[in-house]
Image (cartoon, rainbow, N blue to C red; front, side):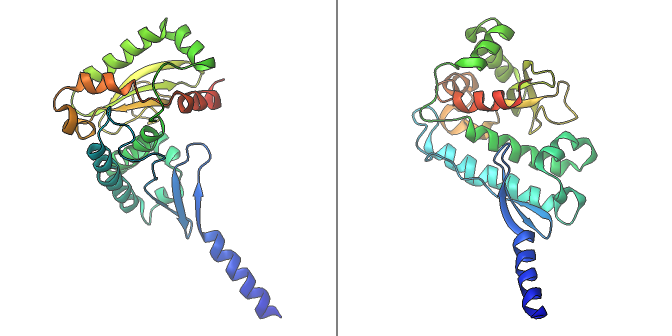
Length: 239
């Protein structure tokens, strides 16, 4: 009988140590194996051609399956067999100054793209509503003024990087931009907060369709924003 009990315990231990979970806060998919985190490429909720004519199919497919996958692969290699593999992605971002540049670049790349895919939708566009709309109007004056400020942040980011709408620890909205794969969660940026909306302005995100016309890419972004997702994030984080 004791051998049967031992077998049952071993089965449950194996299930516990080798389980795939989805973080309820940001839906970043990961697998825990022997208490180490292994990240996986999240599936999109729409097809690669669903965002046309705004974002083209080839760019979406390459961006997701090649660029984002590379960040996931390189992040897993960078954290393997280290204390970092025991931490959540948010914990890594918030303490990124402690960790190697490979984790900063690839962990940031994974976090940023995971958010990016979620705030896009073939049924998106228009303007936000509800409490998010009120907060945007209160903070920036109007939705049009917010669009102008956000677009300027995206257009003037030199080289590669991101533009962000984030919420700070006091529940206040703010716009910022970061270089490379940095994001407002990181403890190395000037203004810290939790991203609600992000726009990738790396050339790989738009060059096949827009070439050097980044402003045109930014303009078309407004047609496919999933404001329901952005507001959901806002409501979960506001004070």
